[in-house]
Length: 198
Image (tube, rainbow, N blue to C red; front, side, top):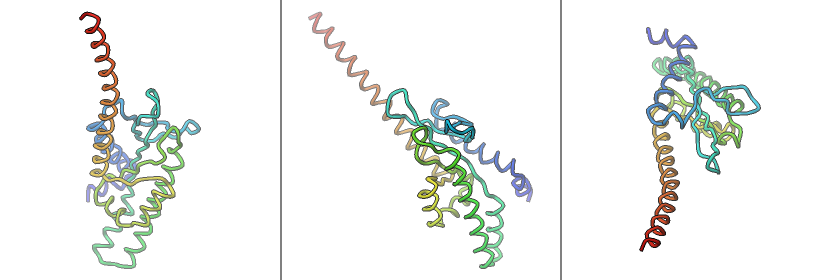
C-alpha cells in the first residue's frame, strides 16, 4: 500500500525508472560509452534521459542510441487489479488503455529523440519492472506497431542487461580490431629494425 502511494506520485515514478536505468548503465558501460540528458537531435532542444554512444563509420564519429524509461503504473496496476477480480470486460478495456499509453510514449521517443544520422534509426523504451515488460510483450500487435511505426524497441531490466552485454562484446571486438592494427604495424617496425641490425 505504501509503495503504491509512492508510485502514484508521477515524479517518484519517473525517478524510479530513471535511477534504475542509470544504475544498470553505470554497471555495464564506462562513462565515455553513454550520456545523461543528451540532446540527440540538433534541430530540437529535447533531452533524452540516457543515450548510448555507438561507433560511427569513421574513427572519430559516433551515433547516439536513445534510451528513455517509461512507467505507466496507474494503467498497469488497474489492469492487475481487474485481473485479480476476474472482470473480463474491464480487463479488455484496461489493456487498451495501457496500449494507448505505451503507443503515446513510443511516439514521444520517435518524434523527440530519433534522427539519423545523429542517432540510430531506433530507440529503446525501458520499462522498469519485468511484469510490466511481459504484459507489453504479450501484445504482439502492439510490439510490431512500436517497432515498425515508431522505431522503438521495448525492454525490461533483464533484456536491457542482455543488450548491454551484447554491446560490450561489440565494443571489445572493435577495440581488438583497432589494437590488432597497431600491433601489426609495431611488429612490422620491429621486423625492419631486426633486419637492419642483422
